[in-house]
Length: 395
Ligand SMILES: Cc1cc2nc3c(=O)[nH]c(=O)nc-3n(C[C@H](O)[C@H](O)[C@H](O)COP(=O)(O)OP(=O)(O)OC[C@H]3O[C@@H](n4cnc5c(N)ncnc54)[C@H](O)[C@@H]3O)c2cc1C
Image (tube, rainbow, N blue to C red; front, top):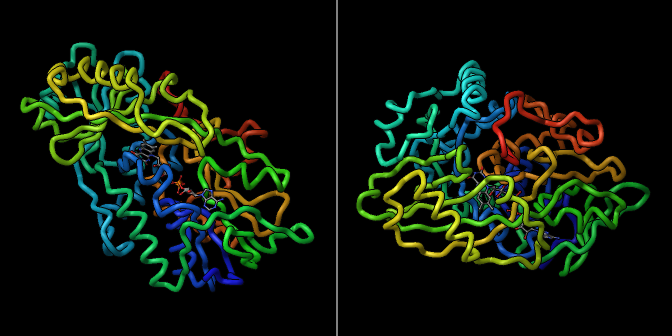
């Protein structure tokens, strides 16, 4: 039965909504209710590559990613449950075009304490001997990186939220955020009204469906992205490092059973604006071919891979490729945690804590949450890299 009231309602049962709910419940926010329209991890979270890395191009994100990476390495103690994190290491390939930027970013990351280094092609070849490195100017290697299971992670947050008294409702959409006198009064769900004076909308690309009736618009665009599944041939079975190729824009995420997930992050790969309620859930034939071509370009033995199809999913893109963690300027008690732009999985344990602190105490205790305010787009104060890589929509 739908509760009639709550101290805080979190809308959205992805990694970020469940993490926010868990942190709120742990911090003693009173009665916390999470409302999810489908099932937990049913949005981008369940289809995530779930790669965990520390290398970022902006110091705030580096520091958040370092804290998050520590949590994934010690998930049972830090959160409880099992995110099924697997440490693979992560190799980045750069051509001449981005080599100077890569050196500058590695220096900045190292100064902040990230275990990361630049490698000459001959050194890269020792770690990734399967790759054709002819056009590679340098590699960047992050040994602590890896990937987790995004569904297990979401359910772990949800379990811990419940253990701390939160209630989680699935199959129940919020149809309206109700306000009285400029502040949140309730959420209208498909199963009834929940009175509350605090709402956090962690609804990914659906955010403007809830914001628009309140006269707000967040610059979050639903972009369809695709992931292709290749079964590696025996000569590539030993390829057990995640690889990001900044020359072709392809990335390669190790998967169980000698499989590799291949994704693309060139500008063209992130340009299909869709309706988040009606988009192609399977990969397109031409994308499978295109990504397979990119895989063969870097790892020639992929020509003998078996392609096993792929899937479509959503990025909630913002103009600077970074999230919006903010409160509404018009409605007191309403908060947004959205716009994760294709890299919000790894940040989830830290984002959850920051947003919970923001709601309960008006600020986050360490990382500067104001850098993620929505107004940065109008103010021209974007969260951007000093040394960006070319042709990338998020860094
Ligand atoms: C193919 C792919 C690969 C990725 N790889 C990585 C990676 O390697 N590393 C990384 O860090 N990140 C990665 N990401 C990004 C990461 O997965 C997302 O940023 C993250 O999962 C977003 O989580 P979320 O909780 O914010 O949103 P979502 O998972 O989208 O959850 C939002 C939820 O809100 C619910 N909802 C919406 N409207 C309502 C409503 N009105 N009422 C109730 N519920 C509602 C939805 O049903 C949904 O479950 C990848 C994403 C994709 C698609």
